[in-house]
Length: 338
Image 1 (cartoon, rainbow, N blue to C red):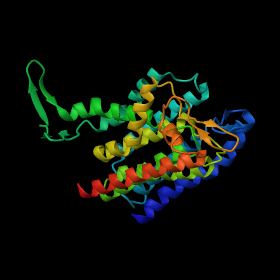
Image 2: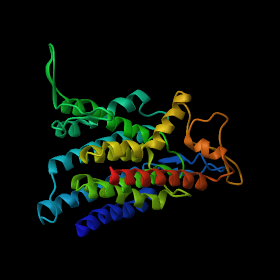
Image 3: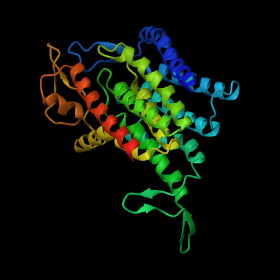
């Protein structure tokens, strides 16, 4: 299992790492650039770097299927694995379309909420037989309940038809909110993926483990070029793909409670963004000395951190990553205990 894990992770890692320099050069030549809003000089940085993540993740997932089918080094449920793979790739395509159309001119907010519902269809199909739902303080609901007129209703179907698409849509949009600083979105997602990979391995959920490893390898490689000062941006391709990946791992690994807890910072971000009717960005106001100042109205966790001191962009990101790491450690500890 150790060999398979290493092969999947490093395949994803090296494909992403190897493709990025060429991709960055081509994007710059084509003029596919975005402004780094948190720099005083407002440099232009190649966008669409999320394409490399798709390539890396695909290579890792396909290698795992090869190791299962031809070398029998690992036993996988290919139906479940391919369903998760399909959902993640469809979401990545939606993000890519948004990136190509252009920031502020791409997919509208209501479309961001609607389109991921279609991407969730593969997972909705394979999770139709999900066991009865468990509600805190109440316990497990019966697998079926009889309602007048409607007849027998399966709670497993409710999970599949309602909770799965809500989870995919919610997670993909959540990771798209807390973003915009060098290394922030890729770093946060990498920490969550690391935790989910460890949890799925402990729970012997091999399909979830493989998806987590394939995504993690790609995201860590991307961080090499996205860390301050960023040489490439991931765009919505990265954020939507990362969120969908987290949700997919949680769903196929039956780790819903852990998944919800790991998104704690994103829930806080949702509240802060809602206060501004989702019009606020996570950017700061850059100064010549590199310090980022928060705007007058707080609309993001990044602004909260900026108000705590005279921090540079790199320091703001490091503080948020530390907070996420603490959430991940607590979440994983609770997962092991309960």
